[in-house]
Image 1 (cartoon, rainbow, N blue to C red):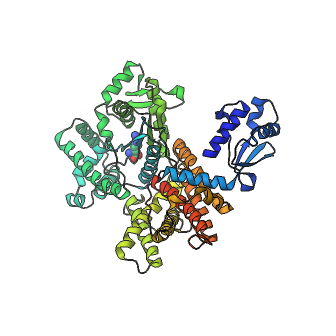
Image 2 (cartoon, rainbow, N blue to C red):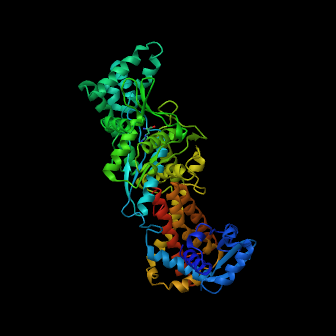
Image 3 (cartoon, protein in one colour):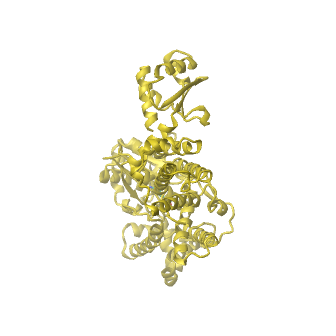
Length: 575
Ligand code: ARG
């Protein structure tokens, strides 16, 4: 970042253009022979009224000799390519890494701003399936990224704990519920009776009416129905809490949909006051034709509240409560239209922050090798996925370390097995569908969490061995001398990736796309291993080289740690 920033400053000074003209243009050439950084001049041609190649020549003459670390400039076609002095570059990155300590790429531009990240949001009495896992893991990573850049983050879980389906569930429970089964495995039992309700409907259509009646009683807080609903909620929350504990995720607020139910009359009043409510087949809707969207249903013909109204009420509540800078929803792609409608209604109602509400969608999950037992029909539960991943990891660890103590194997298997699942949800662009494959997920050499964790452990073990000798306190090493010993292609590749980490963090945050940040550390891990296999570190020719390589190793270790932690993946000092 530092060299790039200095370069942009000089380019702006010498050309008379704004820095902001250059910032988005700068790119990293695909091959190192083409330079360390490049400025494509094509888009400057219009403004400067000159051919791109001439602009490049002109800028070259102007900035030549202005920056001590700029070893060479080259004009190729319409590109101006910059070559760093590798030793000075190495020293600069090492220095930067020593200065920023364990939070490389963190920042403070978010100070004073509150970002709400809503994620996970499972439905009570329903299984916590892989779709909710997707939301949970992507949401947690996004929350971490915001926090890393100084934002105050509120982690919100908008529990699906309300709606007409609970009238149906109460009906089903009253007919077929089994207390003992509920005590043993509440969600399985509740799901069983709910599924049965729908199976029985064909023969007993009157069940529909019964369900509606119970939902009305629930809305009126009738003691018996309300108590049942509270019980369903409580047992579900206990089951979810176990999952969150295992994933090390804590929410700041778990207001479910039910919480907003009482606030809907106020929303209805507001929409009516603004003349936005129109009647359609007995229901109250907001017309959204000018947004090219279907009307948003606010109140049903029987007066029952619905999903969208609860979401609208929630936005007003959240803003009153937390005065948000951004209100982010990590929810699957199928709900895209729903959020477009909700945000459009807010806009129509004159809510000033409608554009600060953002839907962050994700794709679906499929399985390549579905030799996988599920307890719950065709949905795959996160619990089952984690259990299988950890048990498979356990076998691998044990095969590689037959003498390791059982408790140690368990601890590592849990971190690596859970990490592998997390990484699988995070490593690709989130709108792409995920195809799970155990072979890929647990490939210790592939693009997997175990590979990254293993590389981190490798760096840690090198540092541990070095420190045991206590002869090379790194803070006393001369960084300039070290830089001169780290000019090879492999070392430089590592520095380039480390230097790109902050940009990757920022891009990941802006696009709500943790995969961008993970790609950086995954490439860093590859680069480190290439270096590791071609150069010996602790047995290098002389002490100066050992010290320099240790500094490089420590830099990798810190960046890998930061990236893995942002993704919520455990780092282990040994594996
Ligand atoms: N509970 C919903 C589901 O499982 C997701 C809730 C999304 N959040 C929201 N504010 N509508 O599909």
